[in-house]
Image (cartoon, rainbow, N blue to C red; front, side, top):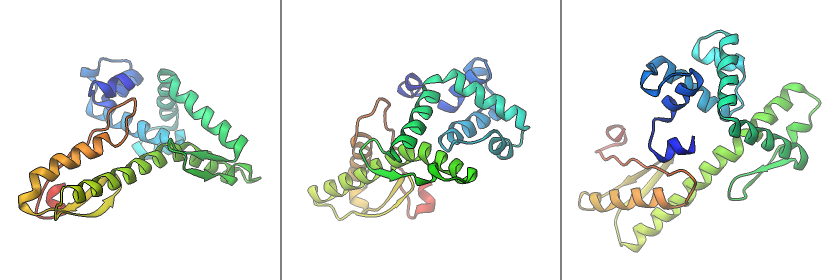
Length: 206
């Protein structure tokens, strides 16, 4: 999977080719959608029932997809197991940068609450790390705006996006600065890719 990210391969097609045992060029649109649902669902500790409901397939078929995924990507399965074990032992999980979230739900006598705790323990190191990176990127972008003496304003963070208000004469400089800042704020085993678009309003940037 790391290799696929480094080579700029469509990660959902890559996963579909492994799960469905076919060449990447033979992966259908529907198969890619199913693989995408598994890719994102795994982060939340998705169940076969949850996946079946989401992509309108049988529970048995959904279980097969998840099992195939975890077999093909055994490193992800091990990562998930380690996170859950550590959370149970320590009572908390951390992001890559050390931000902590306590998971008291894992010790609950209620099965449903423990299940929620397991999902939270799996999700937080991933989405929490992504949130940390986003905040670091915002700090870096603001520093560059001040360093360059720009009139550009950093307005909003929306999930994994930053929205800036930029004078026309600063657009090209800010586009380059924004992409460079967001892609290089941290170095990971896989590249961080940022796309920049412009428009008169947010809708036109989408």
